[in-house]
Image 1 (cartoon, rainbow, N blue to C red):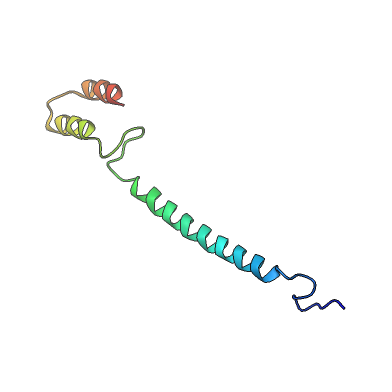
Image 2 (image 1 turned 180 degrees about the horizontal axis):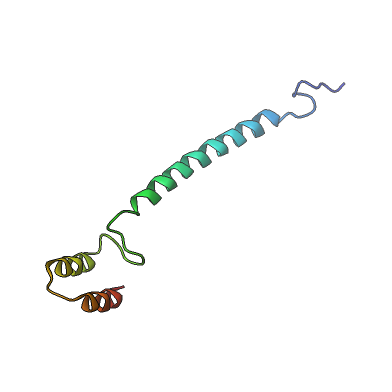
Length: 82
């Protein structure tokens, strides 16, 4: 006789549901970690196509800020570095 309480018809249904819940929770955690990392790679000193942690670009920005190089020189050197 078939039982509809989950044990006679679908004996593995409980394990499948548990696995789906675990996958859902892991997916949510990975999404949160990805969003947090995405947020740390953007900031006010980040230039398009350049890394904010690149020491050469940082030195170039400082030289431009001090007035040692012109805007044209800055753009030319920045493009060469990227």
